Image (tube, rainbow, N blue to C red; front, side):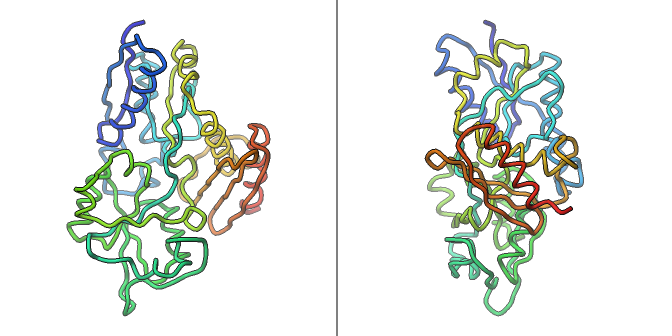
Length: 323
């Protein structure tokens, strides 16, 4: 086999995730050769507007799908939460890697102390619960996030918190936090773990993970997905290193989004302007699925089997979707 070309964005996190796919391939097939191919997306170049105003999740994916279809790359590596609901014709998700930590993290400058609203156990710092304040004295606590999901949950949980848009990769967002534009920013813990900032980050920031039962993650958060041409032998090869428990949760959460985005189960439009979140996990022989859509939430359980998971996702969508 010729060299396998792995397409990725150029940020440190994207390159690290592509490296994990590269490692999985080399572990499964010792004699293959791989190379990393960096592609630039529309989403990387437009940083002054929220994602829902510039095309939604697909802005990070379309260039990769075109490169796959034109045989300029053999695999594309994605953060699964960025995938649009419909893939380009002829392409498939061939594998998913083991899921990382699903939690969001509130990051504040070093020495700022535990944010006032997280000192209450109900503030999402530990467990699900009610509301609490921002800074003492009713001064607003400014959180940088461009995510409607995060904005909606912050407004529900925390009084005196104001969310302002922030875009860019992890390093640029941390730099903006240090420059004083925000009191804190919210990032995905899986991305932070993969970057491994170590002692340097510990000297500059404090990190407060938010309990996923109170502050629900994005659907498929923490999952790395590998896209390939459906007729390529590589698609079948990648099945050998997919993580099956992660794939079960990935497909269940994707089915939920597909149903929410439709008028009755036919996938089509994306969910860009409504807060949606999902957290599916295997607990023994069962799946548990927590869902948020706009202001409504529900929890469902079923057998840890794909068809049961898909049916449960559709039922959860019906329970939280208006109409």
